[in-house]
Amino acid sequence: MKQPLAFRMRPKTLDEIIGQQHLVGKDRLLRRCIEEKTLFSMIFFGPPGTGKTTIAMTLAAQLNLSYRLFNAVTGNKKDLDQIFLEAHLAGNLIVIIEEIHRLNKDKQDLLLPYVENGEITLIGTTTANPYYSINPAIRSRCHLLEVYPLTTEDIINAINRTIKHKDWYEDTSIEPNAIKLLADYANGDLRYALNVLEISALASKGQTITTDIIEQYLPLTNIHIDHDSDGHYDALSGMQKAIRGSDVDGALYYLAQLILAQDMDSIERRLLATAYEDIGLSNPAAVSRTLTAIDAAKRIGFPEAILPLGVAIIDLALSPKSKSACLAINAAIDQVKKQPLTTPKYLRLTPVGMAEKDKYPYDRPDLWHLIQYLPDQIKDISFYKPNENSIYEKTLAENWRKLKQYQRSKDIAKLKKAR
Image (tube, rainbow, N blue to C red; front, top):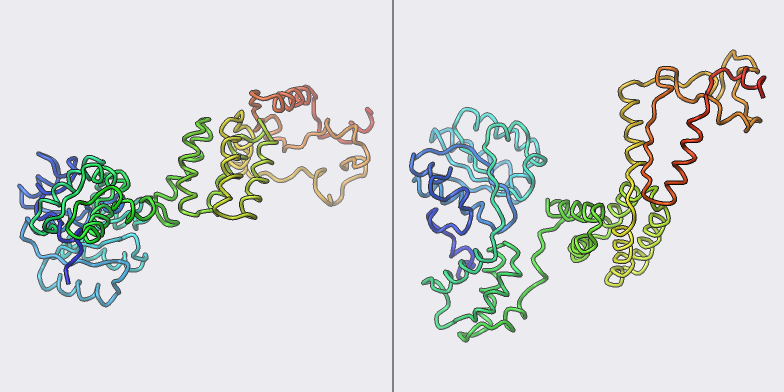
């Protein structure tokens, strides 16, 4: 049984690597490693299908160094122990760990002494952000090298090279438009492109692969989103930043990615957080409408859920923006962390040993706006800074300024007597 086309087309030298010229190009780091016949521990991070494992295997092969491949998803501790024993006996062994972020912390810790003493030269590959997913102790012993998404032109070049390869299907050609279509759908993932290309070649039965055949065997657009991946968080971040920047089209685009991933939970949480954080007091009605839209989306479910979600995105993106409430509560939290003061005695729920005249006047609403509520040490601090780009918050700001004119007092007895 033949191995998959993507496996058969794997490059054997750095010269055959598609893209990644910032790593493998002339006078670049990995090219210098080959020329100087040296290697160091490193972690390649980037999207799927961009050549991370291929580059690692190519480096070891070109340097004529023994290596072992370990997949963090399917491998176990017994496999690791065998690798450690082999490394100890050999004196040094290249260990390529695919999806290294899937190794739990305990297993990552097992690597440390072997990487430290040089018995293992570690080459990890990951689709996750290594600063979040890799043990800091491992990170500090490895060079982090980013592998970029392949361009459409890179994918086209790889497809053209594939159909000229000796392992390509004899008498099967492909239309230029079909190549372009496949490259566009691949979204920088060469493995995806070659897998679809192989299925299309088998289906064409030795005939020309057309755009119709490619479309027939294309799965959903190749979106790099799952709940544990950077693509998931990047799409959420892009959606919020586009709303904040009042870019309707950008916000809709990232929402569409999350919709295609059927990620209702994340859409719900991020939309609500965005509404309160970035729109907030400038348009409270839009915040309420967002909650209503999310409730409607959850009730009707996908695919119709896209309707209220689309309305909410457009509403928020085109709304006035105000982070004043978000900044105010964060400023208050920072102040408490820096200076956690006790509540003044007259504001406590049940003040002990306090004369009646000094207690909080529950029956005197005419005095409430004259009372000092902050502790003495910070009585003049102001957390809220109005943002007056909407009628609603202008009204709040005017009221806030009027209240600031009052001289507040902690002398409750004096206030009661004066009024």
